[in-house]
Image (tube, rainbow, N blue to C red; front, side):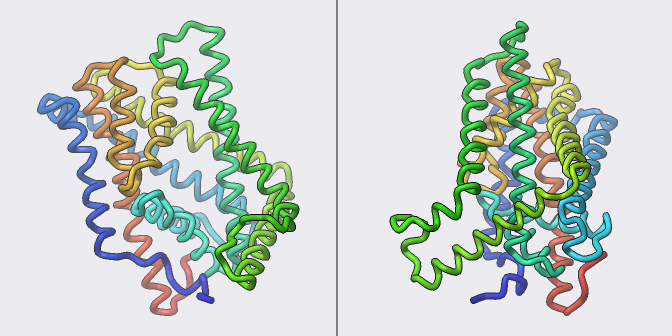
Length: 339
């Protein structure tokens, strides 16, 4: 059995090709949607607005790092803000650089295990992180649906909002039931979980799942003030991060409702999971561009997509790659993790 602390996810030559395609995708989509005028509008994007967007991205990284420290609650050794920020950037780089984002959770678990936190407990921290995100989006979508029913927003595709709320509620309910009923599911003789594995491997997987469930219960047993702080940091992170597209549209000369840009990003990022390129490249840009076109001009939408993607995706790769390589090299040189 391989030691999960041994190495970070390995990279192959074809990973570089996929990342290159992902880097070029926003430029190609912008040229296709808006042509030369859109590229010119992106070049004329206000420097002050771009600086504000970069500042917001930096704040989002630090909010996530602070949230990680609260969820760990000292279980991964002494972890300062700088060390948590390094873990955040490295794991987000792996998330953005791998198809489907599979490298992100794996990198997070490896980095936490190097600090003495077993993989099962690290998985519980990751599940709590995802659960907070789901809860936030569920609350936001419920508020948006209520607003669309009580008010008169001029939004296109109103059925998408209800469909997104239903899908998110089903995912949340299904995940909660799976975790809550896990012991019962594992005891079923007809359970189809990992039936292709040998008996030893199935028992090993069952033990890991149960340990993760127990660690999640322990994490949820943190003081209520800590859990509320985690939820507040989650809300602040997503409200800031999902304001980037709104600022990009304003900088490109458009006028748009902030709530529609929030929904646009949420729906487009969900659709991007079906892209084979890292970071959902291609699908994310087309999704956002398609949802912006009925509201703003073609050139403005295309320019906003390019600037938004540069700040929300490419910046993660640029900032996270050095930290990912640094942590990988420190392991090879048998150095201690950064504090």
